[in-house]
Image (cartoon, helix red, strand yellow):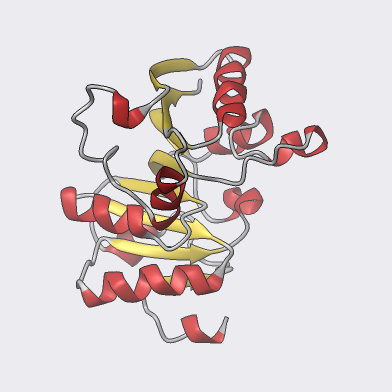
Length: 206
């Protein structure tokens, strides 16, 4: 996408970033937290402000959405935020083994049709990809408004012998005071306005 070409914090279908995020892109040894299906990038920006010593990388294929996040991160002079425009099913092409500490999956397409089960970002197909780039003990987070995706993910964690760390069926009705769970993206605000319940899962995969 041409509008992204001049943004130094955006990498479009890159072929030379694998294993280089800390040393050559962020220029530090901080942990790298990856947000998948990042949309307009609000979560990355909010997390980066809470944890300035960590690095946050948003990944999506929609260039217009990434442009919003990237320009806002640049405006705020956040050096610990970057975006990668690429297909998530090619994630292994962009990260080395153990390069990522945590993965956030925020309001992904739930792909409700049974024929598209493997396209869900918490399917066993994608979890196998995440295993290859996460550090040992790396944590995954799912935030969704979709009950079916929430239940599907719980089942998949069990089937894959994963470790469920936290399950919150209604984030805003819970007693949690985690500031990261209180971040509201553009789409989350729409879901809440429509009366939907926001759900959250935190888990590990072996």
